[in-house]
Every structure is written in structure tokens, then in C-alpha cells.
Length: 135
Image (cartoon, rainbow, N blue to C red; front, side, top):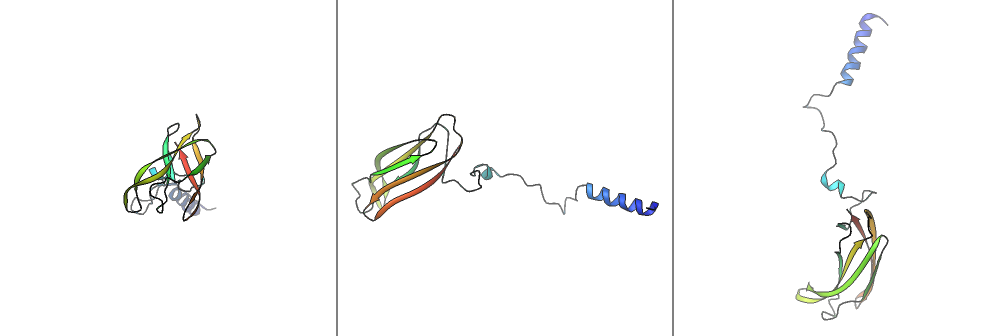
């Protein structure tokens, strides 16, 4: 390679190694705070909870039976659930009976858990799966 060609090759190599001018450069990709709150597969969790804390994650109600909280069952893979009844505004009524599902992660667990809820309403069956991110 001749001297002028070597200089051109060195100039191209240096240009490739230098950062692009600020006006043309895209900022480096940085995770946004929301990206930290994604499941490992990149999906958005249905609920984000703190580890080891009882947290309400789902409610079930039946508009046809406002004074009777639905009977449901729930299970998780990495923790426990508690089911309790209460009252809340639903179906355009200021107060009606609801079933609340609380989640608590297993000691030391952090990551994604899955909540399965089964129940029966006058309008049909409840068969829901929720993704819970434990932080």
C-alpha cells in the first residue's frame, strides 16, 4: 500500500473510532424506569408488589348479587394467598360485596409469580391468570 492510501485508510479508521457529532448522534440506549418493572420475558406484569408484604392483587364481584361476595379460590407458585370479603363501590353502586385476593411472596423470593383465580358468578365462571412482579 502506498503512503497516500495508508493515510486514507488510517483516516477512515480514526473516523470510525471517534464519536459521531452530537447533532447527528442518537443518545445511548438506557433502560427507562419502566423497563426495570418488566417480567424477565419483557412482558408487563399485571401487578408489582413488594417482597414479603400482603398486597391486594385482584377483586371479584357479581353485579347480579350485590350483597353476596363471590366464592373464589386462588393459588400461586412462589408464595401464598389470602382471600377476604369486604365492600367497595362497583357496578354503579356506592357499596357492594366483593372478594379480595391478597398475595404474599415466599421469604426471599424476587421475580415473577403467577396467580390463578377460579370462581363462579351468576354471569359465568371466573378463570383468570395474573402476572405478579415481586421486587
